[in-house]
Structure formats: C-alpha cells, structure tokens
Amino acid sequence: MPVTSQPKVIIFTTPTCGFCNAAKRYFREKKIKFKDIDVSRDPKAAGDMLRMTGQSGVPVILINNKPIVGFDKPKINRLLGIK
Image (cartoon, rainbow, N blue to C red):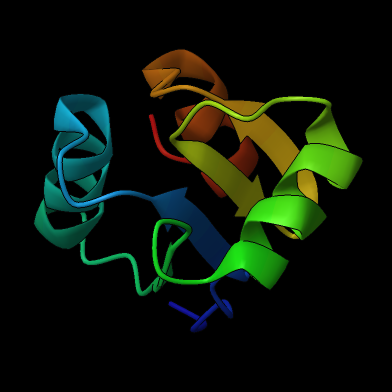
C-alpha cells in the first residue's frame, strides 16, 4: 500500500479549553501529527486566527489551510480522509 503524505494540521488552542484537549487526544489516537499553537501565549497567532476565521474562540483547526471552528469530528474526518 503506498504511503500517502498526511495533510498539514495546525490547531489553535488554550490550556483550559476542553474541546481543544479532546481534539488533540483524537489526533494522537488517529496518529495524526499536528502543530499546537497556544493563542493565550501567542497574541500574533490569536490575531492570525481571528483574521482567517472571524473567530476568537478555540479550537480552530487548520487542515491544509482549511479552517474548522470547534471540534467538528465529521468535518475533520472528511478533510483527513478518515472513515
């Protein structure tokens, strides 16, 4: 079976966000590599996230630069090609 390259996954989070932690746990379970950006410590990233999505709430997940607001598992699975 050919190895397919994984889409680029970035998740904007805060340490106190339950849905953020659930999303990160889900990615780990599915062996999906991701970059975690803590917007409570990175005001520039928080501004970038707001500009991209119009949202200041977390999590915001980017999969190949397509934003998902919240832990929307069906949408995440679709963009990652997970059944």
